[in-house]
Image (cartoon, rainbow, N blue to C red; front, side):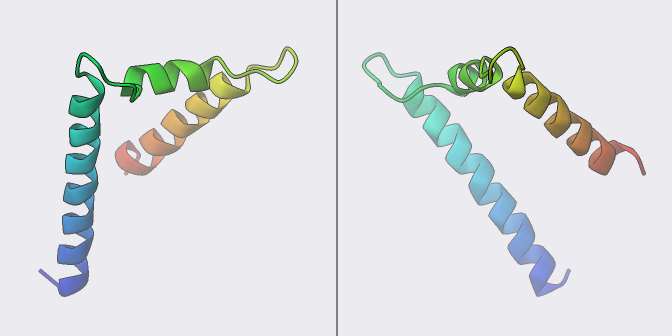
Amino acid sequence: MTLTRAIAIAGFVVAIVACAVVEVLARRRDSTIPTLGEVCAHAIAYEVGRVPIGRIGFFGFWWWLGWHLFAR
């Protein structure tokens, strides 16, 4: 394994652990931090006029992710 690959894997592990810690902190009883579900719901509900920009953005993100991870 090269050093660059090890750094990239370590970066992803750190990001996943950080997201998990923030989610645990958000689920505490007195927390003011929004959960991931609340953030996604707010982003999906975003509209400009009658155009659902949030839904289009999430659809585009999932399409991009699926294309890069599963279309090989």
